[in-house]
Every structure is written in structure tokens, then in C-alpha cells.
Length: 111
Image (cartoon, rainbow, N blue to C red; front, side, top):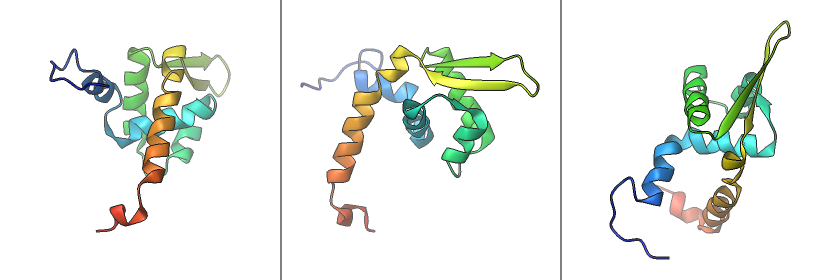
């Protein structure tokens, strides 16, 4: 694989990072790769994330076609977030990231 200098629009890594910016984005995707989840289930699965940040990331994912949001007309309302086929295609990317990070010696993370 060759990484040439290219414009942000043409650079796959830059495009990836523009969609999955920040640590929460990849962790949200990780959780949704397991199964569709409700908002509160995502909040519980991601200790430390604020409701505002989760809402913002989910809206961005939805706008870019990575996630679908299904609202069921029930009382109380039930909303479920699920990866689209495009979002599901992140699986091998996140699997590779996970495998690489687990191969890095623990001493690398010590300050």
C-alpha cells in the first residue's frame, strides 16, 4: 500500500478521520457492530461519554449514511440505532485496529 501526498478530499485516511473523528466515534461504531442499540444502552456501554457528544456523533453518522435511526411509535418512545451496510463495512477496519493495538507492548503505553 502506498501513501502518497494528496488533498484531503482524495486521501482515504483523512476522509476516514473526518467521519470517525475523536475516540468516541470509533467506540460507538464498535458497540453498534455488536447489535442495534437504544440511546441509553449506548450511554451505558460507553462510560464517560456525555449525552450531548453521543447525540452529536449519532447525528453525524446518520447524516453520512453510517447509521439508521428507527423511532417506534410507542409510549414511551423507543429509538434504535443500527449500522447501515456502509457502517457495517467498518468491521474489518476496527478489527485490524484492535489487533494492531493489542500487539503493541504494554510498556509503550507507560509514561
